[in-house]
Image (cartoon, rainbow, N blue to C red):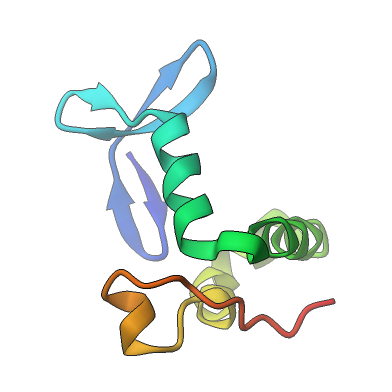
Length: 94
């Protein structure tokens, strides 16, 4: 069990690394990738790059402490996006 955004997430170790678990099976990373591609569309590459730069700018303890605040900078801002529409990247990081 790990904590993500102050919520417990059941995980397991696989040959490909740590994976979240749904039911008794690890969540397929390809399904997660497809979900993100669908939701972020053309912005996915820029969002991923910004998040990686951001993560490298913090010490692990600082990142863990500020996770929710940082998440709020990337989350969808419209009701439409939260209900299944395409997410819009709203981050202000370069």
